[in-house]
Length: 248
Image 1 (cartoon, rainbow, N blue to C red):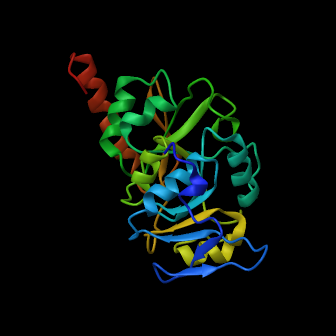
Image 2 (cartoon, one colour):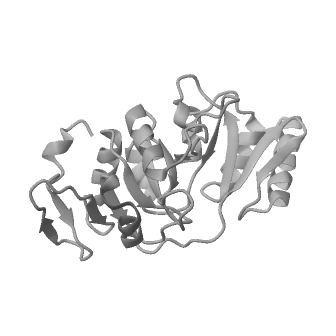
């Protein structure tokens, strides 16, 4: 991803709904690239755009999201402006894998890592202490971040190629319904984003379960698709294994 992005992506063109067709843009007009997931370069271009400081819309295992790199504060600021989200309401971080947790978190107990690995990829968001240098847009007032690994075959390689961790929130204005297709993202956000990765219809459904771990076990912050009882059971198994000197 060290190549000049402008030499790799046709910035003066946009894709229509039919994969592989290009629409010339009118003088002074700016439209986001609309890339079908079936194009061999789609994943790479989306990741490059994120790494270069762009804002990208892409599918997740619930709805479409808009994402920005943690390394670009100006991209995070754009994400909040596009969303109309208060800056004191941090957005979650999506990871490429459980192994990427150390990119954004520190002092995570082994039992918590074991629980995360048990349910990732999947609908579990874990609130953990943030590493030094994590930007304000994802950082809670108590120095924590919410992280998860989404279970979607399109977004995971994008995150991996973009560095392993991205900030993401649903691709809609605050208060509006979430988008479940690329065309709905385009209708809702227009040219506010730089690229839309069309991954087909997002599955929708219930949001992720949000949990914070204390010495007494998991504390439910938001009920979601994963039953808190399953999280508690996994935590108990992990702490029991730790107590017996086993690898959780």
